[in-house]
Image (tube, rainbow, N blue to C red; front, top):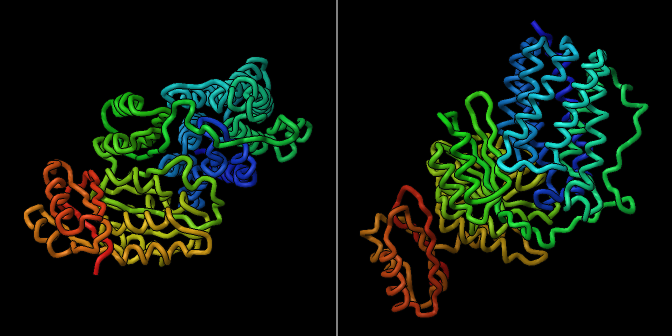
Length: 500
């Protein structure tokens, strides 16, 4: 039976290499959008894989380590790059295990495992683009195949993969227009090269790469010039939506086709009966709906620009909602949004992931349901970093008010304090619809400033029209905002701001 210790060391070394380089990788991130998070996404993906492995005893088999890492990386995959790398490594690790493990695999089988991994990476992406991580994966496989065909040793076969991968990394500068314009190589491709370099060191020793020259990542005046100006001019979507669903017949093809109709940067990857889906879209509700229809119970939505210019050491914001239709406005205001249609199914792993995506240091969590708030408080009591401030909210209208207040924050104001104040100032109600007129009469007066209506799936527009008329009669200056929340129940959630 294959020994797992060498495998563990390589996986840990690969994550350390990305962690050390994450700031540089973030800085050269220009594709598919220049949102400065490729290094962070890759690190968090690998960290979740290693975290799953760390739960295993030291006596765990090679196959058990492979399965744990694959599942952890899949569930923890962030961004387009993280989704692709999780699929690449899952396939490669499976090949290693099939042929005796990292310490025993022969040159030809190592080359084949790299080729299978490259094929899996290409297969994960709906529209493969050359000059990216995919090109480096294919080049590494070819380099290893050529070395093995020349009767090279296992160590030299691994080295052949790295030499070819490094050469392909340099070429990404000219292959990818965005990288060329910014004066950089592709960030995801650079991240994969780091993983392959760690592989060589695990196989051939710590000094195996010492004779190879460094490959520069910034190819113009020694530094990159990356800008978010015109971020979506390429036609991609402004929102990133990710979700995990369980295996089902033809789920990959069906999801890929469906997500391609609503966005780009589509990647659907799978391992051990789970599928991770990723898309950039301008219609996040449609992507969330696809996730719900596919059986996803928690879906993460974030705006690709709002909040990305902030330092990850600053305070972030997480919005927990049962309403798929609230994902877009909440993300617009800078929140990382976790959509949980059935609040009783919330998993701590998903909440932990949303918190990490929001900030590395401190996050304010606002929840639209008592179950979601309770889960957030439980997590806050268990962890030190990022520190969590969980607001005293349990209604979707409070979430809207708190996040809106955060978007209007001025320098010097405390995020948690302002959000808490805004949430506390909202009068709320939940109605099946029959008592809605009574709620409006009771809650709205002449000084009312804002009324928020959140409608469940299937509630007719006439309900909102009636509230409009009632509010106009009592508070002519009030704004009435109607949200197609799409929640299962109750039929109407209402929040009223201003007034006595």
